[in-house]
Length: 214
Image (cartoon, rainbow, N blue to C red):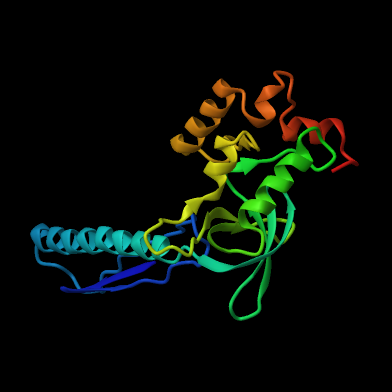
């Protein structure tokens, strides 16, 4: 962002970067080469400068959050318990990795159970993805909701449902939502799903132990 103050007519020009979550702001307050008669004039100009600066920062932050992408489409493939392929209305196909959970790998204990449950829940159905980022593998990473046909029913938080049924672990390293943590705790206390086995290995540890098997 560039803020320019010339003489007694301050103006502002905002040029935010497109990277969400990164606010790289540069601030320039330029005074003309004229001489001010007293310090109060300079103080007034600086006051205008600071007011415009903070107002511009608030505007920039608002615009960044407003640009968070939301994608809707039909689930055309379920890869495992936390990854799907989505086709949008305009034909674009995206591979989507759930942001809030980490499900057992297919070759891991309970991996097929998690996969089958997710497929029965959202396979062939319309979902909404609140996009967080595109990862190093080109996958869309985001939070997932099932859009139900009944108008009176609110969208179903798919990741919360997976945790409630003991079909995945809360990916607390990357997601800090209390409701997801609580959903996992309820499943663990009830020994539902993968929690029936007290020795279940989290998938991130399993991947370290089996780097060539997914």
